[in-house]
Structures are given as C-alpha cells and as structure tokens.
Length: 393
Image (cartoon, rainbow, N blue to C red):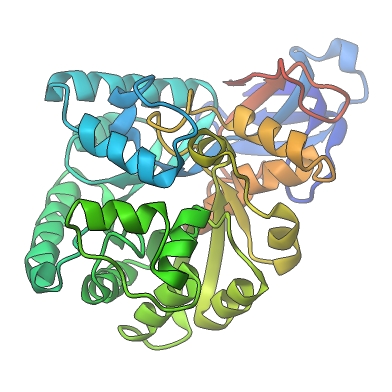
C-alpha cells in the first residue's frame, strides 16, 4: 500500500478540496480510501501543493508532434492551414514515430493518463498499443469532392480495421464543416457514432464562421485560390450546419458522446441547437492552441451557463509549445479568474473520463477506481501560478 498526503486533495467528487487530505492506493494504483490527515507532520509523504486524479487530454493530434517549433504564430486559420499543408510529411516515418513516442511519454510523466487522439494515418498505432496511457483514436475524415465520398469511407474503414488489429479503440470521425462535402460529413458522422463516440472541430475561428455564413473571408478565399471545393453557404453557424448534416444520417436526438472541439464562436443559438440535437454533448477547449493560431479564446462564461460538460485538450505541437494540461488550465485561470481550480480540474479529469466512457475507472479519487495520481506544485493559495508543474506519482 502507498499513502500520499498534500495540502489540498482534489478527489473531484465535488469541486472543493480536502485540506491536508490523503489518499491510500493499492500496489496496482487502485484507490483504497481518501480522508483528512489528523497529523500532517507524521505522514510518510506530505506534499506542499495539490493531489488530483490523472488528467484526460480530450483533444490531441499526437502524430503531428514532429511539427513542433515549425509554425509561425498568429496567422489565422487560413495561414495555419497553408503551413500544415506545406509541412506535413516532411520527415521520415522513423523520426515521426520517435517524436510522437517522446510526446506521449512526456504527457504521461506530467499526469495525462488518457487521451482522445485524432489520427489521419497509422503512425501512432504501435506506440499507443504498448503505452500505459489509454487512448481512443478518432480516425479523421477529409474530402471536399462529393463523388469521392464512397472511396474515402472505404479508406477510413480499412484504417479502422488496422487500428483494431493493434487492440485500439478506434472509429471514423468527421474533421470539420469546411474540409468535407455534405455527403461525407453525414456518412462519416453516422459511421463514427456506431462506436458511440464522435469528435468534431467546430467553430474554431471567426474565419470559419464568415465562410459558412457569407461565403467570404480568408478561408473562403484560400480555398477558391487553391481550387478546393467550398462548403455550402448556409447563413447559419458551422455548428448548426454540422447538426443539420448529422440529422440527415441518424435519428434525432443523436445518441453517443459527441465532443465539439474548440467552439470559440459558440453562441446561445448553438448551445440550444446542440442540446436539442445531441443526447450527450461535450465541449473541448484548447486555449493555448486558439491563442497560438488566432489569438482568441472560447466563451467560457457561456459554456459554463450552458450546462454542457467542458473538457480540456492540448491540440497538437503544430499549434502549441507543449502538451501540458497544467499550462492549459493556468491559461484559462488567467483569462477567467472566476473559475476555481476545483472546477478546472473537473473539466480536465472527470469530464474527460466521462466523455471517453471511462468514468468507472478514471476521473475521480474514489475507492475501487484506478485513475492515476498527480501532484501539482507551486500553487498560489488554491490557484495555479505561472510556476505550477505537474508530475504523475
């Protein structure tokens, strides 16, 4: 048995911590019990900081780890897309695998125990198979030419079989409103939901919304200039468009856990539409990536009022300097100081576990669970500081 105590223990059955709390773990990491220490100075391990369950990275592209440090910041989505198209596949497979493996090891050491990962190919499959981190792999689908829908779906289903041969949980998922024909958006969403899970890039930038609402702006111009088919101009948000395409393929309200990633332009109309169309919607925020690309943050006050569970992701090293959950939480805390550390940790641990369907194992420090244990150092009272770091114990 192992026992750890700290100034604050965030078990996350609620949002408030236990002061001078302890957790006891079996040798395999199963939680035996938690409580308040009556004599902190006598504890075998007493840490000056916070203990919490392992983090769940709700949105990552780990296969893009080889792109770290290659991108210019602040280019907007059109500029970012140009860069990723130019830099994709510029390194050998061996180098890509080494860097994504290093990234997963670093995430694990910092306390990330599970990840919702986006994949466009099989580069990460062998690493995920042998890694202690749990991953659900979302096989991202692209294709703006309607006539290619069937061929694209055959390709992604073949990739799903390959992922499953490695023992991975994997299924197709649509990328976004602007990289897919309406037919492919519907087909991939319906196929993905057969697994019970979907992850969708939604309302990431003003440029995306301008393109969908008015058929104008940098992203629209970029696609026209490159001879790429443009999405339909709907006069509505890209989120409402996605839900309409989903409605064309599955009965409403759609079952399964549907993660709406980014949602920097979410409004009240979108909240109402998502809650009406989806039985189990989730939101994933990736604040450092949003600042990296277009210096914008999601509308956290609206998200909190909506009641839709919020999760936290890191996105990829193409649009982030690190894949560190504490950095993401500190960014959110700085921008939205009304959100307590306890609530932020619910987003980063409990809600992510629920989205992945792993809430019986991960997300909270409760007897019988095996959620991992993370120590967060250098707090400022019950808040993070710029020096705060995390380590998996």
